Image (tube, rainbow, N blue to C red; front, side, top):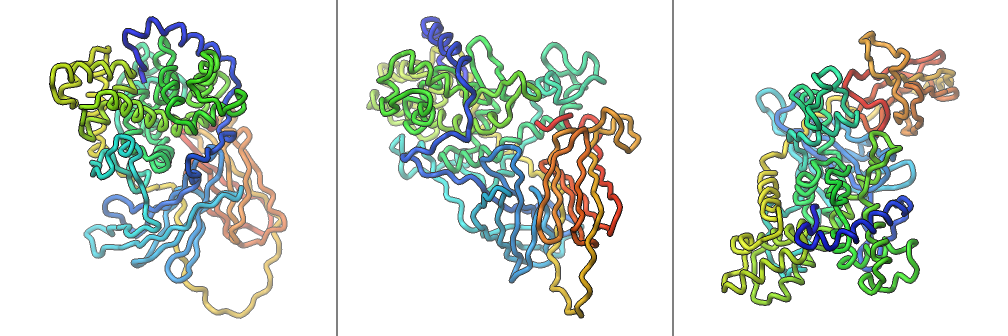
Amino acid sequence: MTGKKNHLLFHLLPIILVTGLLLSMLPAWNPAQAQTSDNEPPKQTLYAYVDAPAGIVTRPYVILSAFGSLPQSTALELAGVVGAGDEFICPGTPCELTVSTDSVIRFWAYTSQGDRSPEYKATVRITTPVPGGYKMEVEAIEPDLYYADSCAPIWDMYSVQAPGWAGMPRTPSELHTEDTLHYLAGRLIDRGVVDASSCPNGGLEGSAPNGCGIELARQAMIEWQNRYDFDLWLAGKNLGISPYILKTLLLRESQFWPGRSRYFVLEYGLAQINDFGADVALRWDYALYQEVCDGLLSNCDVPYMSRSASSRAMLRGALIRRVAAECPTCEYGLDMDIAHSSIDTIGRTLRANCSETRLILFYNKSANPSYEDLWKFTLVSYHSGYYCLDSAIKSVIAKGQRVEWSTVSQQLTCPGALKYVDDFWNMLTSLENRIVPPGEYETAVVLSVPPPPPTVAPTATPAPSTAKVWVHVYIDKNNNNRLDYGEGVSGVPVQLTLANGAVIFDDTTIGMVTFDLAGKEAGQRIVVSLLGYYRSESIILPQEGDVLVAFKFTQPGLPTRVP
């Protein structure tokens, strides 16, 4: 968001600087402390969904995933029932569930802290025979996904048929893109997320990546531009703002890098929100104002605009702390929990600009633009501010012309506004063609629905084990297939899922973690998973001794610490 960078910028620059100073004095905002206002319904925090794999597959399966507005370190799992009662457990997300026939699947997500999603039901169809394998289809997911555009009623448009770019994808995976983003690749290399030391000039020409750098950064670049898809989907559903619009906003403003890219105007986060954007959000979103005010100022019943100039500046600074992910002491200089949680604030700031646009149209009563034009007007407000849009509409009315984008766009005098909206619209309307199905999760846990157990005579109770399980996680820098000094990856969450569904967690230290399974039943199958990395191995717990499970990564795979 470049903010109201028009002729007012010079006059308002002292306000920006004061807010920046106050911002630096504020304590870090903790997303867990945010309160839900009585004016907004409580937001669901944990979801599960099911996808069919893209194209033809050699075995019939579906992909189950879980996500939620939870700290990034939270371990998510799934469970459910196939058909009449065949139970399954996914010790991580996503996971592949093998099915043998057309089936009805009931499933849900949960965490070890007691969070649980609603229960979902989906019908899975297998098309056979198909040359080369199977074609999977997921249909009739219940409960139905309810979504309503929250800006349409703000604009008094109650029966509008929203086009596809303003809609709601059924699942977050329908936001997956694989765009080549040079700015993002440059930041990934510059901050050390990607090691491009083997490239000329370390993969960079100035701040831009060279060809070698782009290729080495490609995998991380694809992962990074899709790492917020769950948050975008959740914000879209909860706020009534299309995730397609929100994803395009992040693409246009920051290419999904949550740091500051335009220092001279003090813009922050994934959507480059500045002092002016914070002001619009606090004026129009009373619930957001209450959340920001609570614990910062006394008597939050006083409206935002009735407060003193210094109090408003502190509130704007506090809101910006919600989206400012720069963190000198954090890995790669970014607080990724703030980056993910900022999506909600970004959506609410954009929605506040819908109200700002409505106010401008109220004072220009002869205006009656279309739904598409209203979104373009809102983008002008978001980018360049109230006066830029208001002045252009007044000029159109004075000329006796119809108020629509084709006329208003010609009267925009604020620098960059027209190009901003045109670029944004090209990105938004081409997004449907750029969506790429993520395909198979080759390293996901594969769970087959077991057949009913046969009736057998009782057997003796297995003796308890005295074994230990050693887990190594390392980047094999010298390609010798073992963990050596300097190769261990610390802080990777490891989970053991026992045969009875019980789980054990611990994090690696210098690439190693040990699980003492003394007393556990010998002979059982145990799934060892790296949470968040979709890597898992199965072992049979022996009666005694040590079992080594090694997860090897090669450069430029994992960072040396968990983001």
